[in-house]
Image 1: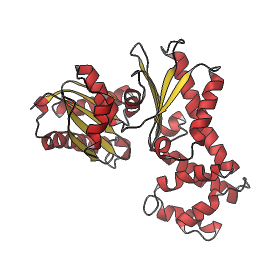
Image 2: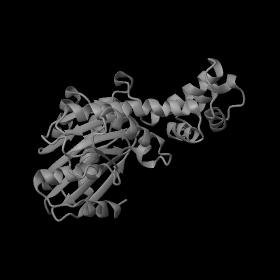
Image 3: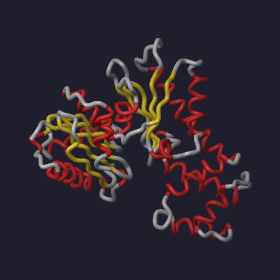
Image 4: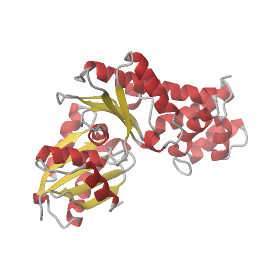
Length: 329
């Protein structure tokens, strides 16, 4: 078997693993559910069982063994503190992996979405976080801990904000919103008194939060002020974090800073109000300092593979990476 590298993107909803050989060929691509302990009923204990099984089974499906691996990069949601990094690194070592890098999944977007391999990735997927890798190799993560870090992004946050805004319009004399009719139809609500009953009955069972976070964008596109307020709050969150990372890290002023948008809310949402507001606000904070924005056009796991390839000296281009993964997906 050829020497192999492995990239893993473990998210809060779905996870991907890709194995590539030194010629740039994808020898296996595997998918599964969340690899974020925060999304698992059994938390760290479940992760200890599920993660090694997924990794070793994927290697076996490629007709390889762990001895064929020369380097791996793991980008996992839920790796937000030093303790979490050490604990999850221990799980990986116990499974037999020796040479690897473990980071929060937000860093994969820098490797995959920033052409220079240095920059900032803003994640807006199941949750929200921002990560920077500067030109001196320094790394820093912002957010990722929900309310503890006041994360105003991610499908769960947007979904909860939609429901809260509708509730306030009905019971706290807040402004009326077009999102009310959208929520009533989705949850089969007939009277406002039934709202909470229906939401508790159907949310996460018949209706997923991703079904309702889009209501904010759809209503905002029609000029709905409460929906626009939700998106403006999220834009302030992302713009402030991006600008802070740019100012506090090694991003030379003589070249544009590269910022990648990643995650399902950024990548799949067709209403582009949020990215436009973020760009405008970043420009205001930084006094028009050049910033180049990209939307990630390949799975974040590609960033893990590129990172591993650079680390071990494999010559794998972004195009080869896209094509290799596309053959499996």
